[in-house]
Length: 170
Image (cartoon, rainbow, N blue to C red; front, side, top):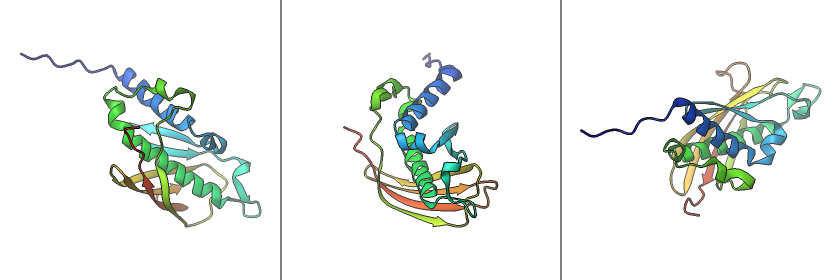
């Protein structure tokens, strides 16, 4: 009779996942500047852009600046792609969030192309985004991102991006 390894307590798994995500997100200063946060449910991430006056580009409408919208979408794509890449390592317990301290985050994917579709004005309120990794290989990845505010069925912007994946052996 073989004995199976006892599963880790759920609190330990959640702490490891949260620590890995926190380290990944805090490794990019621009994410903190914009105030982007990530809500994690299992392996799925939702990016949250809390509203702040500094995000307004056109005070007459008022509308969220197009550059902020594009940055929010690209941040979501890069972090979600990195998260998907690291997921197996995190789940196996092989990922050590302590190695991410002092700016030693894993190399992030590099943007090759990123196309944003502005579907409507971003209103002065919180925004949310989710990315779907369409293809992820050793060298290349393709991601689609949608951002919405009050109703997920009515996105205010979407984007498609192609990324060069970092060499995992470095």
